[in-house]
Image (cartoon, rainbow, N blue to C red):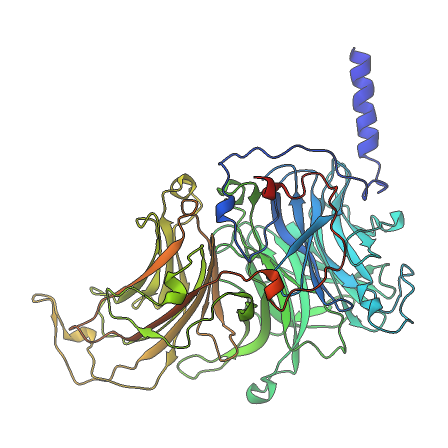
Length: 625
């Protein structure tokens, strides 16, 4: 018996140390239906934020746009066997015309049973340099489907290497050449998340995180598959515990003439976990220059500050959607997808039979933040939600309602057909007429329709110059008991000076005995604030002070959990004033429910780029419930 056991262990060791990839694309192991650990919470599944039908999902991978059939592709870290992260780990796959209606496809990349296909990216061999494609001389856009996946694969000893696989059927199935798995090795267990972009004709650059070294390693290829070391960048910005998921994109600076900046910058996104300012995980970015011919320091910073792309607690692993460049001067804007969760508590959130979702895809561009004191403009990214209005049943009202304290919002576009997904836009002016003993607070209470004592609280605290989000008023056990699911969070936001003045009060005019204010002759500038929030069942995303194009400097992404089916159908407004007239003014609100049209009714409908796989076991588990 001991001999048989020893023989089994030796055989297992030999099999697991085989570094070939013969079974990377074999069928996934058989599995049964998942056990529902928290009961079926499908009723709270987001409507237009992507979620897998069942199983675990984390980082977005391989996001790319197939110009040949105009489909966006999303791949993601996927464990179909359970609702927690675990081995084996696959690349799930979904595709969309509009980034809102998603069709989930079969598993795209399959590692051996004992391994994991970790995060990575997709790029396009539109010059047929690799030898894996032969359609570049054909008419049309077929060459833009020549997609190659770069991903991290862990060996049996947990060493992480970078592998390449390619697709010949629009991104549904992948072929792995054994010579290119590994394509790059670094003898490290913290070496992952390759992103590949094209920076010139015949030139591709791969960025890989050397996580605990706080470095990004760059590799260069002239044939789209053989990469050589090309320098590194690191020890910059907010470090946290480690670097992950680097993403490099070249963006034009459309305001370069006005502010005398360079015509373009290379923006480098780095995700950090754990150790984010909000706790857990987040994504920061840098502005710099990239020189592929500099093999020592190819990426150099233009500015030595770093900025979080989103101030919320549930925004991680931002990945830019790969689009083949038409030239190499930079893109005007770039689209990206982000995981809407936080590693501190994501394995425990109360959803079944799936866990986690993606945030709304966003578009980013370079802009300048001009401080209220008109000091030196600061280079920042602006972002906007890619929320197409024509995919929803009703339009956002054109008129705002002016809200007195105690009012409830009553527009029919919001109060009828509340199924858990809606948006609102809040606008108000704030005058610093308050003292530290009497801070000005404006609050929206977003109440559930069937259990009103469950609600979200969103608002602005005048003395803190900050918005707040309170997600703690819930009967859900997870919300009450998880120590890392912070119930009250804040976002520092600076408003726009309207240059209007009115009579106001000063702190010196406060009488501590009578608790009254003495009006004095003074000016009190009204500052304008706006907030645009998008809520989808258990995700709250907010964009502050949007410009005319819908872009915002400051955003926040948060998950929340109310009792299943307790959909929000009431917005109550409260705020305090000084002397019943000073402080907040022109408090305005408009809202609508975001119930999606049937896909055949919207412009996004089109024939799918590939056939469904009806034989895949358990693929539509959610529909069987």
